[in-house]
Length: 277
Image (cartoon, rainbow, N blue to C red; front, top):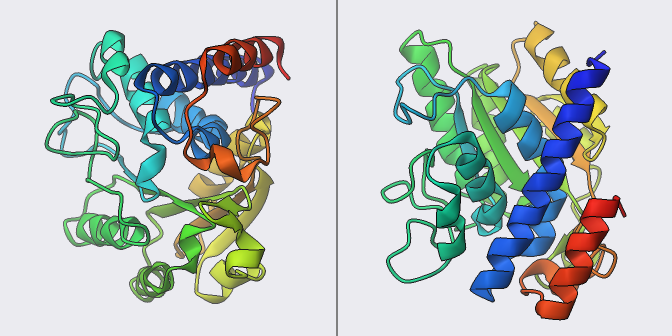
């Protein structure tokens, strides 16, 4: 089991991540807070504990790769990159501004630490599969982590990518599914039912785990279990999360998929996070 001290440290770090997400979206008056907040705990575990990366050498050949397939939640990625030292934290205040390295979707040509430009839903996992296959063929030990959304899982290309990963035994690929049950147009199961995603990923050839995506200990324990797994299969974590997690008026409200808080809402949100709503 994960050490209590590490769990506490990462939980506190996740609070900082959430505050920075809200601050940058509030300042930009634009962005996607709901899915950024739902992914914050998993992203914190990755960037502050799990990934083998070097902020001083973003293109290090043997680094672990990360693909944010649901690229619209880039505020959580940008925050983790800034806090890890890929670029000055002050740059977060330039989100979505003309000329900024922090565009509305991740741009690998502008932003250090971004391994691939994403934004067109469904495509990121295919790129991650290609990265993992390249590692195998080049006899490299790096791993590839890819975060996808449950709304994004409506895309057929997601399942083509999973089948390909299974065919080529890409056990160096870890898929993290942010199962927050809401997408741009409404409740996922009303827009397009996904069925049982754990069973689905398993049937398509993954070794799958189902967790609470806000339980830091569970996240860490699952990442450890993945490293110990000898199945030879690609890995998938189906993480049950809450869209807008940590903010009273955002949680499970579809409108906060892509809307910035005003001054009053921002103040309440920051207080919620600080007090552990």
